[in-house]
Image (cartoon, rainbow, N blue to C red; front, side, top):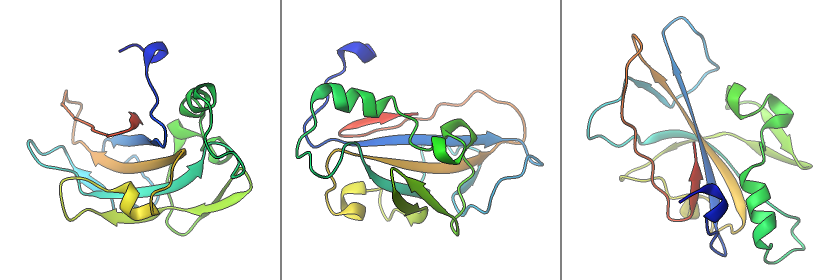
Length: 153
């Protein structure tokens, strides 16, 4: 489905996943969500998560479709260098739209991280999930992502 035809469901929790794939020696901020390569047929259960970031002011109960599409294209991490330059730090505070957020280390006990369980059912919000994948050399790998709302990598 093309991005212009994408349907947004009421109550969606958007998830933006950021992966830092690097070769040793590149240096990243302290991150407990680090993988040594991608393991075939295994779920990635360790993540750093930030959110939920409301896509509109709290006074708006149900944002229209245009507001949801705009939110999906917004780089919410722009105040701290942007999505493409993210270096999560568990001890740092990030201010987005006047509210302070902190990265949380999350370990899933099952196959998926439940943002709904983590954030007590936040609707119309964006969350980020980040991990580092260390590759000893360049490689072509398959990485599958799933969501019951919307996701972007």
